Length: 113
Image (tube, rainbow, N blue to C red; front, top):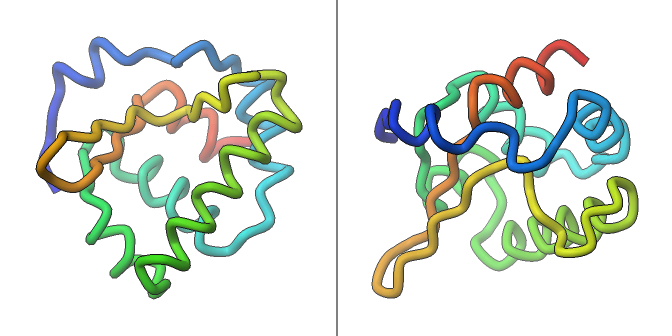
């Protein structure tokens, strides 16, 4: 985990409204995905690597990848974001693992709805 205040200052809501977050939260029924998003919200705007999320959820690497692919499908289905944009910043370096960060504003919406 790393703290990155500049990310928090710059990522904002990624196009989400409080209502979008509420709709998404109500639609996410996968335990690992809910744990992932809740953990990011509880620790916003800290950044976590994929391996940390694997450890957090207890899911095998490929299982978590499938779960997160399901999140993209859920987002497209319930929010109207045709590109499946997550309420999370995903950084995917060419030679490293993906990292995930949620802004404090989106985190607050996730935790209070």
